[in-house]
Length: 117
Image 1: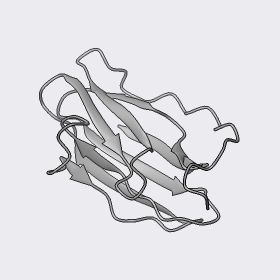
Image 2 (image 1 turned 180 degrees about the horizontal axis):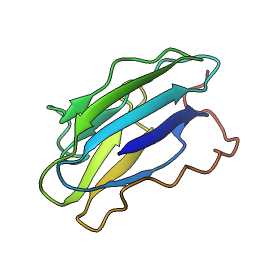
Image 3 (image 1 turned 120 degrees about the vertical axis):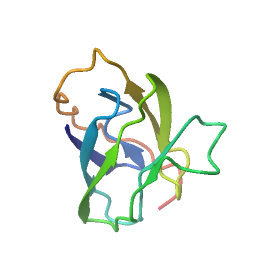
Image 4 (image 1 turned 180 degrees about the vertical axis):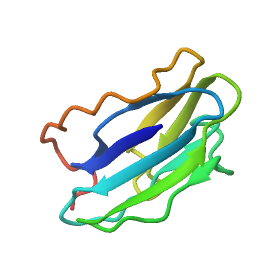
């Protein structure tokens, strides 16, 4: 499953990604900021961030990367964030009813920068 994800205004352009159990998820992650470095880190929950299920490389402002991970086998809701800017969060929903392809995210609306960049 291919997923497009972007960092805009120190937030993710989508806060929910839905996939099937054990899906191979290929994420193209664009950092659309003019300053700041981001990553994507997937965890069991917001309270359990010591050991990630997957953590991407860091992405500098204006750059993008593509990475692949295997979705958890257990259906449920998982937590993702930028480890550098932990207010950037979202959820990965693992469901047998998930579509085979993601709907493109809506463009992010301009917003305040909570980090003061």
